[in-house]
Amino acid sequence: MFVHPGPGNRSTFLDEAKQLAGKDASCLLIDAPWSDGSRFASRVMVSSDEELRSWYIQMVIDFCRSVDLLTTSPQVDAHRIGYVGHSFGALFGGILAGVDTRISSFVLMAGVGSFTDVALLNIPSLAGERLKKFRAVMDPVDPIHYLGHAPPSAIFFQFGTDDTFFTRQKFLDFFDAAGNPKLISWYEEDHYLNSTARKDRCEWLSTRLNLSLETPV
Image 1 (cartoon, helix red, strand yellow):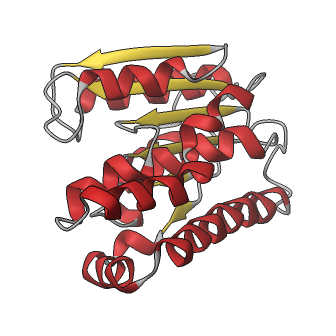
Image 2 (cartoon, rainbow, N blue to C red):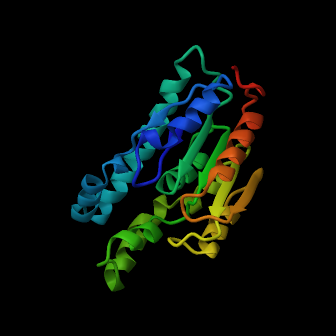
């Protein structure tokens, strides 16, 4: 199951999904709500903090329903389900890691532990008392509170050393919040990482999910 960054859509991970499909994986590519960047931003701007939190909770429920869909397929082994999420998708993956035990393996790319940290990049007016209230309302659903409940599921964290959106410490806080087993890799790249990161996560998922070692010709 792949969840793209924002901006982006389900085609973002299409080539990667094809690669894993060549190893007998069934991949579900999701058009998350933020795939329509302007529409998503508009809703965020007009929603109250409480409405936004409820919307995020519903997104998590919808992602769980995606796992329901996968497990109905006779081609899918319900004991070998993985999740790949980038940026905003990594935040939701952090929550899923703590609430959906059916997912055994997570790759979380360029994510952080707080929705407020993401909002600060996109809502210029978020400051002072407004920021304080927003942080308090969103705190209960922040992924940093859920990562510690992921074990025995494993998490592979991938971060860029030249990321201009979030600091290295924010990434380390995200990683430190998770329980074992977990793995972290750094890449000399920006927020969107590179082909080496892609190769590493495909190999990690292949091992974790016991996929075919050889790609059919």
